[in-house]
Image (cartoon, rainbow, N blue to C red; front, side, top):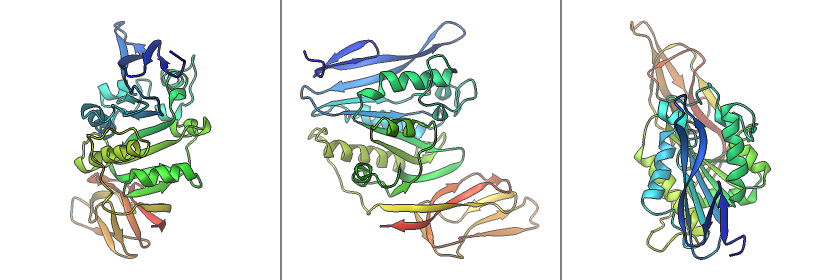
Length: 322
């Protein structure tokens, strides 16, 4: 077989038409037990592109993990042509301990491209970027809103990238949010390597939301169908609504500490001055109205019942394009 017919990854060789589950060896526990992240590989007999599907860079983002789990369990990851590599949980330490970060308190998504001799998070980032990512022609990376902040389903990309724009439109999430690549993030490092990456955000930490997971799974099917990789057993539906492109946005922050209740859900379009939430105290001494500072779409809502002054409670668009 030629080099293209054999995928050499993490010390294993996987030929066309083969399936494999290889181990991404992260580290050992204090008890000397190995911690291995399963990497699920499905290859068609017919050559084609390689799509890498990842989730769980943050250990608390179970909604993203559930999306990749469904992609695997339903067999969506078995391509008509090419190769699909799935890593449902990258930060297995955080996932086990129900924590966003690594055991050393570091956020993996701020340590790319990593170092072979650095911190634990840095070593994992380095291994991912040197042994797995270079095989990919496209990456779908699934994330979830942090803490109690619920994100509307959205694809995040940088502006003025024609390929990413087209792919984001095909994915069909309710929103395409144009945001800068953060320094030392997975997305920024892949971008610098010239590998297209769609970052999906949806839901909140430690929660599995059916609407969000359906959006992620259906979007993945549309991308694979576009690439000619989706088998005929799966139906592809068009999004119910056109994507809204968020060109600019702002956070609405709490003016007082207290008990918080939102009056709007994500995906809602609000008019300037509309009451979108309330901040009260346990003693009934005040009721602070939270009003929309401008016309726009609410695409993130803080669902924590207790907030502090300055906390981000809503993310609202300030400039959009349909």
